[in-house]
Image: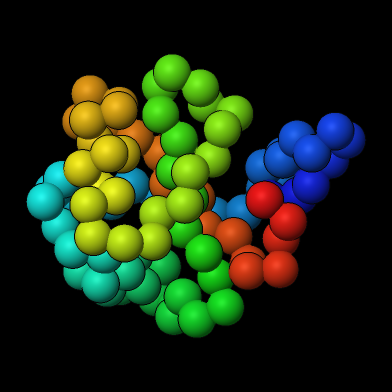
Length: 89
């Protein structure tokens, strides 16, 4: 992800993947699934998601219960983004 004009983020290339989650998953379990999928640790990264109501607004995925928000706000389907901690979001 790259910060563009007026604070708008742009996705430029990189890897995309599909991962299955349950809405009642704990944050630590989500991190383990993501790390296993990308075969890389998430230290130095943050997880973000958006809802179908506003795809431009990224919300932090950082605690237990956030998966429920992601799933309910997207009718059981959603997008998650991984960005380095130093990216100004």
